[in-house]
Image (cartoon, rainbow, N blue to C red):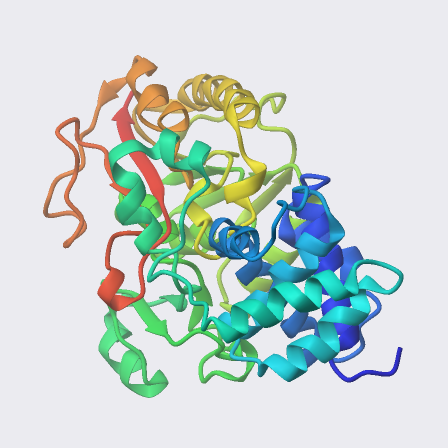
Length: 408
């Protein structure tokens, strides 16, 4: 169908279906759903439409239901098409006539008149979305008293965070790139910035890493030639941080492909680390390390501002599965410590089962995080760190992380 913008909408519909019906991540679904699109602009549009529909799904569904006599089934194609049409209009500022022209053809042979009527009714009523997305009820119940504040941090996709190879150049790079710095060694830029075109990319002066994701490695301090193990190391931001701070790093990950990409970043930044392709639970070594950093596999619900699919894919089963894996990995990480060594555990999850509950079971000596170690981030009474998307909202927010530290 030769309608400008239609192929992007068709791919966006495939993305929604993959996430909501098959439980795929938005990133995994994109590999197949976006293949038919040739231009980068169409791929970006399809991804943005699907992401905004997922971010505001509860509110979009409420609007749709308000304009129908009988609620559409949750898995009805017409509902999904309307979700995308409304996301295009209300979030991407697409004019209603363009939304209709590119959206209704998705229902070829289906209830086009119904969808047209619902959308037109909402346009005439001047429908709008709330200031912050409404979380799915089950997610709101899990996050309890934090839910409303976290939701407020999800209204916009996140900005671009860079970690600098040399923190001493923070002020210089913030000025050169036209960004702001929230911590030494960090620069934040507006979202939509083309990374490869930025000054300093080719010379490896920095790498992309959410500010929250940079906190765990910061808590290990200067390496001074000591040995560190980065378990589950890919995509590599923490390995780069540790290497830049003087640690001799062994970076372990199950994915050879992801470690290969890490190797490219190590080369670009003129840093070096030993890489090992292995399962952390099965890997055998006689070596013991002065520091072990375990950024464990998790549900990644803390990344909901950049990956809104987690709001609809993750439930008690996935949380329980990850918690079981994390407990086993923590035990393994503790056994790899040299006497007096430090262990830092982190997850980009907002679920207590993956954070506080895991830390409470560790039998090593607690090494509480001090309030002075990372300015602006207050440790919990236990000496742990907990971040969530409600924090630093005026500066663009931050991912949700849980971080704890011990000594052997």
